[in-house]
Image 1 (cartoon, rainbow, N blue to C red):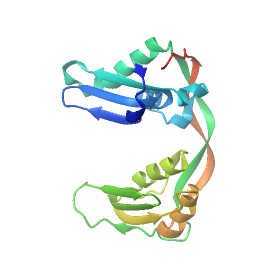
Image 2 (cartoon, rainbow, N blue to C red; image 1 turned 90 degrees about the vertical axis):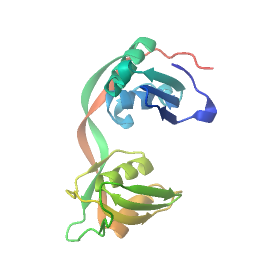
Image 3 (tube, rainbow, N blue to C red; image 1 turned 180 degrees about the horizontal axis):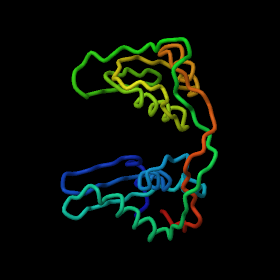
Image 4 (tube, rainbow, N blue to C red; image 1 turned 60 degrees about the vertical axis):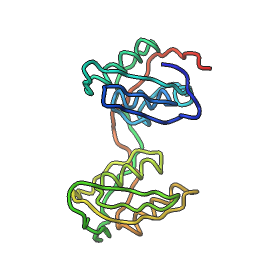
Length: 203
C-alpha cells in the first residue's frame, strides 16, 4: 500500500483482467470492505479514519472472489493487524412503516431490475429502487447505520427532498414525503475490534 494522491481521493477502478485499483481510501474504509462490516462498527485508532492509502490487487486467473482475501493478507502483513470480533450495543436507525399509515411510494413503472438515482444537493430522484437502497442512502446522509425493517420487497419510484446543510432533516423528509420513519434504537451488533495495528508513514 502506498500513500494517497490527493487528486484521486476516493476513486476505485476495476478492469476485466483481474486488477482492482483504489486511491485515497482511509484504512477504516478498507477494513470495512475487506471484512464486510460497516465503518461505524470498526473500533480502531483515530488515525485509521484520517490517513489515506492507494492499493492495487491483481487476482490469479482473474478470480474476483480472491480479491478481498488477498487484501486481508496485505492488511495483516503491512500493518501487523490483530483484531477480534465482539457483540456490542450499537446506536442505529431502524427504517419502519408508520403505524396506521400506508407508505407514500409509487410502484416502479419500469420493467426489469434496472434502477437509477440522481442526487443533486438535497434532491434524490429514484427510479425502480428497493427500500433497502433508500436505507443505504439514509446511511450515507446520516453517517449512521440504517436497518430496513419495513418488510417492503418491491421496487419503487419516488422523489425525496431534504436540507443538505442539516443531514438529520432527512429523517423528517422520509416520514412526511414517503410515509416511512427512522427510529433510533440500540441493537447488539458485531464489531471488529482492533487489538493492535502499526501506523505506517505516509508522505
